[in-house]
Every structure is written in structure tokens, then in C-alpha cells.
Image (cartoon, rainbow, N blue to C red; front, side, top):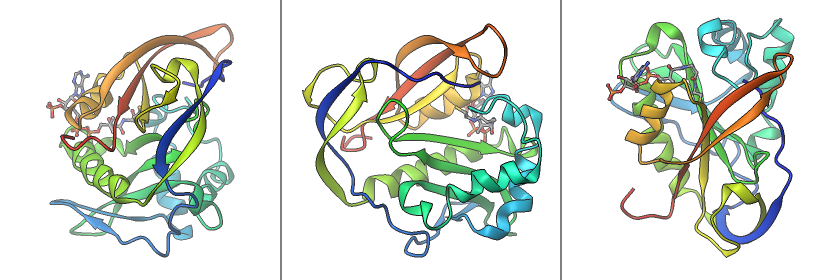
Length: 223
Ligand SMILES: CC(C)(COP(=O)(O)OP(=O)(O)OC[C@H]1O[C@@H](n2cnc3c(N)ncnc32)[C@H](O)[C@@H]1OP(=O)(O)O)[C@@H](O)C(=O)NCCC(=O)NCCS
């Protein structure tokens, strides 16, 4: 899938993770029962290229297609390496037992086109269906919630917020309507579905894509 940009924005007062975000160097790895989540590094390039050349993975991402060459993967990886690490909060997802890289996920856009931070994740196909994305997302959300916060004004797309003025901090995830697995991961982690919309699919001529936006409120105690 590929998104078009929203047109109407409103200014809201909200809290957000303090920018610049911690550098990769300052971030502690996170562990779960089966996973090690660590900052991305330059030598993840080959493993990331393997992930980003799996068609079954890439068809659900904003790129909509596999990376045509490793230089494209390098450009993507550079978004998460110094000096860009303080603008994103993305992690390599590795098996705790072996250290093998099996995917990546986190906040890859802050702010995203709609103004809020956006979370996403992708795992190599052979690791789907074992609850690993849910394990990743729960651990990552804890780390996101623990980041220092600042009160600030922010421009967000009108359709990505219920009101103007003072609003609760949002974290957004956008899935294709057909991506039931990812939607299940989000709902299980405490996200709520709040908007369905169609967008031009920039990856194909005259293509329309059905998307669902989910939101999460990091400041809510019960999540
Ligand atoms: C989305 C993705 C990360 C899910 O990874 P995963 O490790 O298989 O996810 P989990 O096992 O933690 O959870 C998947 C849930 O969806 C359910 N599910 C999977 N496929 C489903 C389908 N086609 N229909 C309905 N439910 C489905 C699973 O049963 C599971 O729910 P459960 O725990 O209640 O049984 C993985 O499929 C992926 O990398 N996809 C490609 C990239 C992508 O789509 N990224 C998200 C973009 S928004």
C-alpha cells in the first residue's frame, strides 16, 4: 500500500515523547520471553534486505512492494541510524536465544503524515503465527510509555482527532482492511479502531486502497 497526504490539519495541545528521542546508543535493549529488541545497527543491512525482499511481508507495508535493490534497504535503514535515530524509535526484533534478526518494528515516523507518531512492525514470514508480533508490541509499548514527555502544540490531520484544543496523546497504526492478522495484534495490545477510509494506492495506476486507522492512548493507566 502507499498513502496520499491528508489536507486539513488542526492544532492541538497534547503531550508527546520529548524530542529529540534518545539516541540508539542511549537505549537499553528490551527482552521478552522469546525476543530481544535492540536498536538497529549498520550491520543489520543484509538481514533487513532479506526481510524487505519477502513479497508476503512487503505487500502489507506502505511501500507495497519489495525493495528493488540493497541500496533502497540502506536508505530505509539510515532512517533509524545516527543522526536520524533521535527522530524515530524503531527496534530490530531478534530471537533471544540465538540473536537472529527476524524483523523490525516501532515508531518509524514521528510525526507521520497525519501529525501523530505512527507504529508499525514486520516479521519474516517463517516467524508468523507464533504470537511474536504481539510479544514485540507489548514490550515496545511499555518502552514508548516510559519515554519522557513534553507538553506541546502539534498539527494533526482533522480526521485523526475528535476535537481541537487539549487532547490526549495518540499513537496511530494504519492497516489495510484485509490485514486481519495485524488488526488482531493491535486490538490485543489495547488499540481501538476509529476510522475507515479509502486512499489512492500510489503503488498502482488508478488503485484504491481500503485502510483502517487504529489509535492508542499511551497516558491511559488501564492500557
Ligand atoms: C502482521 C504480523 C506482524 C503479525 O505477526 P504474528 O507474529 O503472526 O502475529 P501474532 O501471532 O502475534 O498475532 C496474530 C493474530 O492474528 C490472528 N490472525 C492471523 N492471521 C489472521 C487472519 N488472516 N484472519 C484473522 N486473524 C488472523 C492470529 O490468530 C493471532 O491472533 P490470536 O493470538 O488471537 O490467535 C506479520 O504477519 C507480518 O509481519 N506481516 C507483514 C507486515 C505487516 O502486515 N505489518 C503490519 C502492517 S500494519
